[in-house]
Picture 1 (cartoon, rainbow over the protein chains, first blue to last red):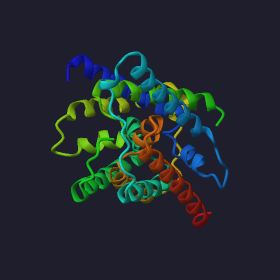
Picture 2: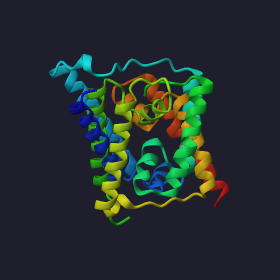
Picture 3: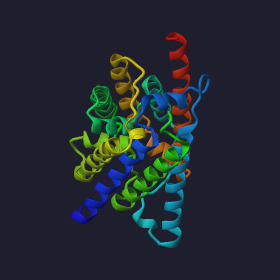
Length: 141
Length: 140
């Protein structure tokens, strides 16, 4: 990859981390508050999802429709909804609900050198390596 | 939570969507964090450099935000460290087996109407909500 493009990727990563921190996704209590629908529910993360989905969805639509950039964008073909997807998403849901960290916010919290994030990320590396090496789960997204 | 508002959530979400869009155009890959990070851990992955650069940007951008905004720096872990470790293991394993996390499935997949991503998102959000319910039941 050319240096200019790589710099663009760095900026994209920076915007992603800024978005996570600004939106409140990096605060586990707030994420748990969103997931606690049977208790003291905090709907704020719906706004995060709405903003992100609308921007990415409209953006990819506009790039394909008006800029003819369709071939540069990743294909969005749906893969089959198989047992692995269902079980994997379920296991992820248990982990997410346990503490309120998904992969992005956990990595973002490394930026504040938080011990909780370090422990979580090290364990996450273990889980990923098991899935990839033992079960061959090496998908792109 | 006086420093926090729905507008922060919305603006943060828009930034996440925009960042994902830029990354998708530049790399030609669906920018899901679990996939970007997971493939970095695979020895056979040929395109490790942009993945490392993206994640370095993510951590740097977050670090800058924590320093700039009080609301962004808010961090309230509510569970013991041992639970953190178990949760990390489950999140790492589950996101790779299920082919995506909150960003790959929840943002990019849902936004482009991919049926597998919509199904996965409904499952992990639903299961996470049930997990919180059960955890609160056991630990009142």
